[in-house]
Image (cartoon, rainbow, N blue to C red; front, side):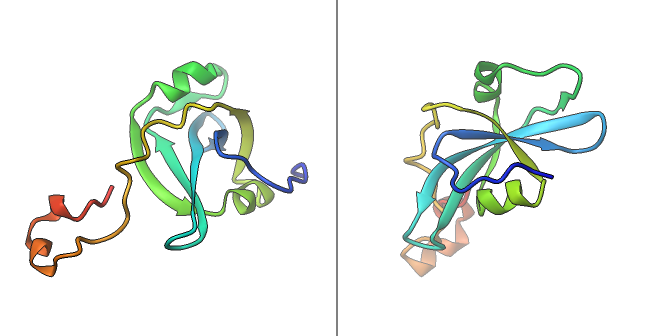
Length: 116
């Protein structure tokens, strides 16, 4: 049974077991009350062997694969993720955007959308 958790905090790093041999990591980086009113995570690219645990520092230095909205508490409650640690280093979230451009004619240029 997964430990009961009442609240996650910005900076929490979560471990995601992919199978019996591999795991990866994600971090709760922001709360988005302007769009979906949920947590925003960054998912790291590197996959680790379960027998070789990384340091928190090495996880946070990894390349970000994507950002997403999600419910971090539900992921922990369902046993998909487990709490690994916490760091105030959440990267530069000032450029993360999930919204299309304000000007519809800019839709022809995908780089103008601000999608991560």
